[in-house]
Length: 94
Image (cartoon, rainbow, N blue to C red):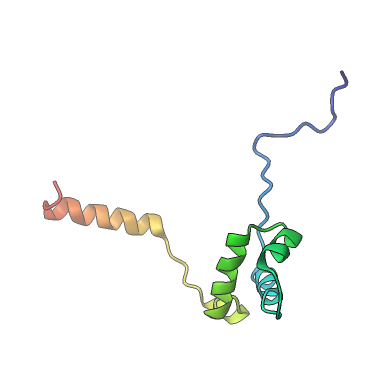
C-alpha cells in the first residue's frame, strides 16, 4: 500500500465561512418566483435550514453592508463572569 503525501488531518474542517455579501447573494436567489430553497442550497453546498435563516436575516435587513458595520461587538464571557460575581455577592442563589 502506498503512503499518501497529503494525509488528512482530523483538525481539518470542511466548514465554509461565507461573507455577508455571499449570504445576501444566495438569499436573493431564493426570492425569484418559483425558486426552490432546497435546490439553491444544494447548488451552493449549504444546508437548507441555514439558507432559511439567511432569508430571515435578509428580510430583517441584517445582511446589508451597513448592518455588518453596526453590529455591536459583545464579550459574552465577560458578561457571564459579571453575572456570576453578582450572584455570589447577593447570596440569593446559594
